[in-house]
Length: 253
Ligand SMILES: [Zn+2]
Image (cartoon, rainbow, N blue to C red; front, side, top):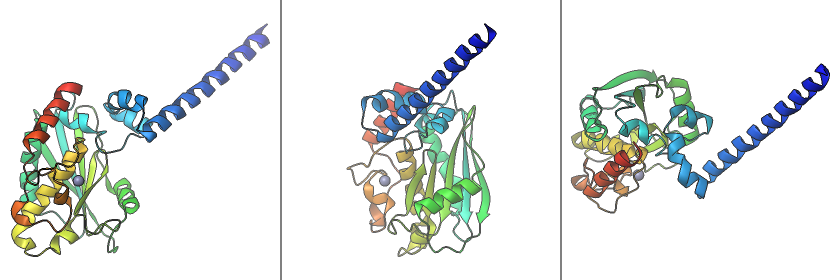
């Protein structure tokens, strides 16, 4: 009798395990494919929780927007910055970035910047794969209860797209390419504007914003690449971008 019961329990566990594996794989696939009903309906609900993002591999830009826009669940925002030796952000940018982020995030607590590691590496440029590896090695802070995190890694150049001066890497991280910025003409006069506009542009992507058609928005496609005239470069979001951010804040959080 006991032996029979054990076999039934064992069978039950094997079936439950198989069903769990099948369900998990199916959800992973649906999120990976993106263009389907399940993804449209459930991606935001899943990505709202940092641990579910880890379990279901939700690391695209936009997946971490809840961390930044929900100030009840995440009253604090910490910005961790790691830099390749010689390619650090200007001190003025580090001073002004928290204020710019605060205007969007409206966190009840101050935004804290932690300048963390100096990276020693003799690569002349980095691919996205190499950037993600550096991030894995050097990033120390991840979202947790009460605290959202923005991770910024400052490097020299982007091997995958050498005209880019910034890119998002995962849902709460971005890379800025100081080597590309410093190659621009008159960069010393415009360094602060270039750094701030690029960081805010990438941050806009982390909030799920797409490129703006307005050339006077920080979300204009040309902000993150070289070649844009500096005199129309801006750190301001357009009215439409701001409306979209407010809608997200109200809709999901
Ligand atoms: Zn962009």
